[in-house]
Length: 100
Image (cartoon, one colour):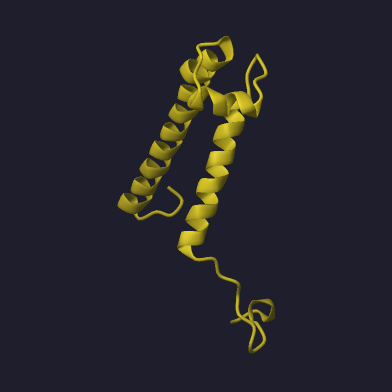
């Protein structure tokens, strides 16, 4: 039986987001979170220093911290998260269990 709340009046369509726009939105959010995670730490480093550490690296303390500690930490976190997502999708596909 169809619930009345699930039926839309004629002429109205459910708003749909295409897969490409969802992918672009997700990648933008990932980039924002990556930049924010690089700024976090014991020593506060402003956003401008992050950009200059890639454009004009001068070997200062802030640039070394960004390039050797914070950026690798954030990139490894992204890689581990994507590996866990792929392994979860594989487990669901192999066991044919959407709750696996």
